[in-house]
Image (cartoon, rainbow over all chains, first blue to last red; front, side, top):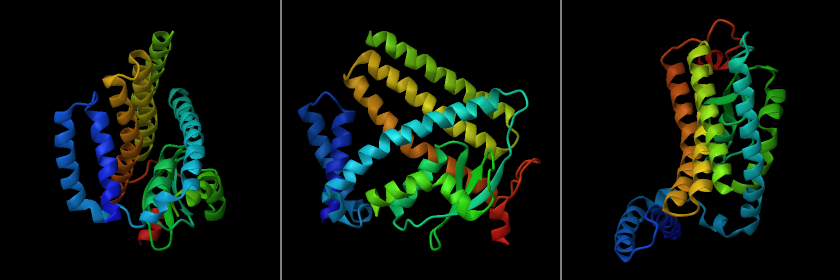
Length: 164
Length: 108
């Protein structure tokens, strides 16, 4: 039940922002549609509703956002440099890294963060053993432990505090 | 002032989008191309939308731009991930200069 209420609130927030400025007609339709969606799919959305109450998770998320944007900008300059360089300095390969994160949301965010940060893109994930296969445009180290430290080290600790 | 800043961000965004497309043409195989396509095009488009927010302010258009940025950041890596995984499953090889392919080794 709690999961449904959380989903309803989030969906309704997105609906209100989409139909800005606020108008009673839109609100009525929104309540109906969000209620239907929350009723049908609500029990799949959140597995642990109590996690939404802990304030420290939001603070860590606020810390994570600027870090992520900075890495994202660095990634872009890196790719742009490789693309316009006449010799095309790439050394691609698929390596694997091992992560300690367990929950679905945390793994999704880790994979997304890896994709948007310099030179790396997640290809597949082995949930049982916590192994991610990463395509790296400039392979620096094929060893699983060192690669984990280089690629996921920064994000893993913060994401563990937000989602685990 | 805000309008000038907005136009600057839009120009930066168009620039990054251009590099992304150039990467699509120049890089050798599907995985490298996806790298250029996801990174540059995501941030380029986000930058254009951010420029729009500065230009228009937080009116109806600005708020929709914020939503677009959030959904782009959430969905475009997932799309790239699905494409790369699908390409690898259907047997697309890495390009010639590739160093290693641990995924292929593990699949056997």
